[in-house]
Amino acid sequence: MNAEKPHHPASGYAILVLLLLLIMAGGTCVYYISPEVMVPFALVFIFLCKGFKIVNPNESRVLTLFGEYKGTIKQNGFFWVNPFFASKDISLRARNLDTNPIKVNDKLGNPIMIGVVLVWRVEETFKAAFEVDNFELFVKVQSESAMRKLAGAYPYDNFEDESEISLRGSSQEVNDELERELMERLAIAGIHVLEARISYLAYAQEIASAMLQRQQATAIVAARAKIVEGAVGMVDMALAQLNDKRLVTFDEERKAAMVSNLMVVLCSDRAVSPVVNTGTLHP
Image (cartoon, rainbow, N blue to C red; front, side, top):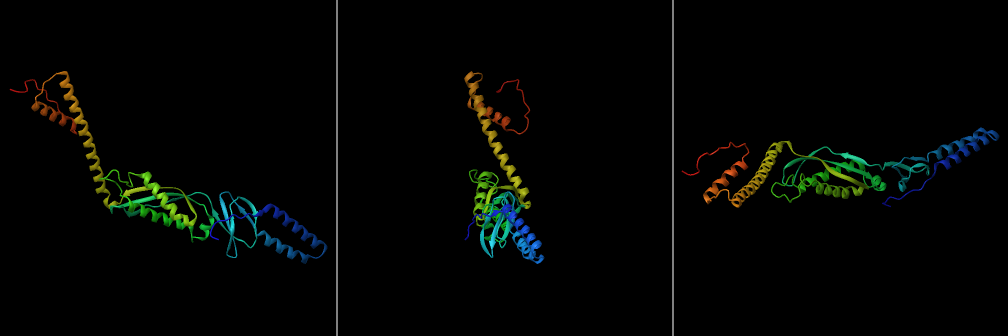
């Protein structure tokens, strides 16, 4: 038997009433027969009391009889089971695992620091109790292993190809992949993954400064490209409106000079100093 099965125990209250009646019967025998008669009654009472079990909400008890799995009690309440049963408590509550950031290499070989937050709970008590030695330690070790595999499958950032999935830029896709990986790894221990996501992501200290400069340079290039694109549109609009309203007639040389001046003004990262020409453009 390698799967969980429910166990339906007897009501603890009903058995408690029977034991109280047993004690009363023992007391009656002591009164009418002999005090020695009370000894077997007391021994039976103590032995049967070992069968009482209390199961709190979102907890369970795994029952075995001389090494044989007999079932799991998942309903909460006061119960009585065979006193020979050995029981093990397993919590069914949701738990958090916040791993410490570890140093790994991404797809491009860059050292990075990565940490994850995992929300999980026990779903199959048989697997949690008997398929692994310590299911809590198993969750921790497998989470770290999944982090290393995930980091090695994707680059930290996609500088060259924006469509490529990256750890920093594609958080939803990466978190979904992490959750699927952990569900496959932890299924052997009967663990259900409720949520898994990256909680910490950064370049390792030895390359953080250099990669920050690279990110800044990429951002500056992207900003400059946007500025140039806007400036070209503004220059084109200015020339078109001047031509439509026939305010000034430009030859090709003057158009080139005006375009050059406007591009310098619009693309400059500093405030320009206007120069007012009060004379003619040509001698």
